[in-house]
Structure formats: C-alpha cells, structure tokens
Length: 242
Image (cartoon, rainbow, N blue to C red; front, side, top):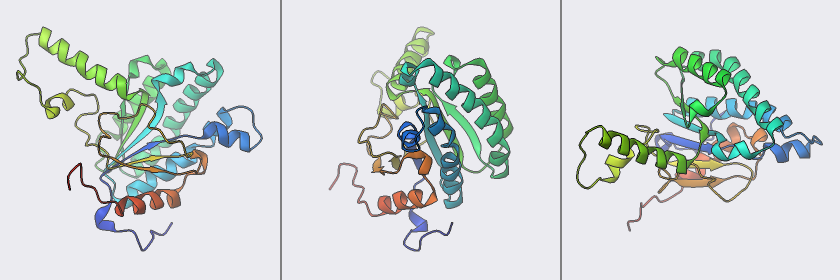
C-alpha cells in the first residue's frame, strides 16, 4: 500500500504499542457464536501491523497478545487461543526472518503451556540476529504484573547483597522492569473503540499519545495504521511542560 503523502517520514514513532481488541465482536458480526473465529481471522491484521510498521522504519512494535486477565475466559477459548498462538508463531517465522524482524516476548512466559514456550523460544532463537524492527509479544502480561516483577527483582537482588542507591530514581527502577531496555512507546493504538488501556504498559505510557479506532482488530490494516501515525504527527507533545 502506498504511504500517504501527508505522512511525515521524519516523524515516525520509534516505538508503537497496540492493544488488539474486538475479535469477539467481529465474530458475532459475521454470525459466528465462537469468539475463536475472530481470533483466527485476526492473524492477517497482525501481519498488516507488523509489516506496515517495518516498512515505515518503526524500530519497536509491541502487541498485547494475551493478558494475565485473559485466563478468566472460558477454558475452551483459552485452549484454542494457545493452539492458535503456537500455529501462528510457527507459520510466521519465515516472514519474520525474511523481513529481518527480531521477535521477543514480555510477560510471565513460564505460565504459558509448554508448547507455546517451545515455539516462542525457537522463533526467538531463529530471529535473534535480525537487525530490523523488534517485535515484542506481550503474553501472559499485565502492567501491574510488570511493576510487581520489578519490585520482586529489587528485593531478590537486595537480599543477595547487591547495593543500590539509597533513593532510587525512575531510571533505576525502570532498569529493573522486564521490558528494559525497550524505550517507552510514543504511540499506543487501540482497536474496537474501547476507551481504556486494559492494564497494558502502565509504567511506560505515562506520556504516550493514544489513538483509538472503532475498527475491530480483524479489520485492522495498513490504512488504519497510517491514520494513527498521521494523527500522532499532529500532536503537540509537551510532556507536562508549557
């Protein structure tokens, strides 16, 4: 797809994060009762977002794929999601390699089914030397989990005898977080029109620009991505200053 002329190629966000929402509603619109139908049809949107960001020179893309709260969904849906995750990671690996994209993950990965862990590990190993965009999947993740994990890491290192400054700075604490050293996102996109951040990157999005589109995630494409970036480029980012 051609890049819109109104887009400023010098003001592309370095890091974009996306809350992928609306698969269940999309399935219902298609007359399907099973939400997994929407999840299966969302794979194309993931590819559109990933390849679209890579084409524009985005350095980091973080996708909210499965939250810690998602375990509360019906067991059949969760198991189908896990199987779909395994399949998608396996099938998309050649595309990641071809496009020089490095895959990483953030979240309580040890809490995922063994097969998911294995497929994820294999793909991360195969793409580890890629020098293009870094694609991070947030899996079994929540913002509160990450902040708590940072506090637990601090506790563990203190108990092991490591010394820290008497008063931690924000940078000191951020360096303890599992997402470190990925920079904070400049732009957070949410599909489906919902006006909330859903426990995603709570520490990192303090001054992130938000873009909410009514488009349901399976219908997300490069056009919507471009619209979000163009909107971002019109913002006056003051970070609390005048």
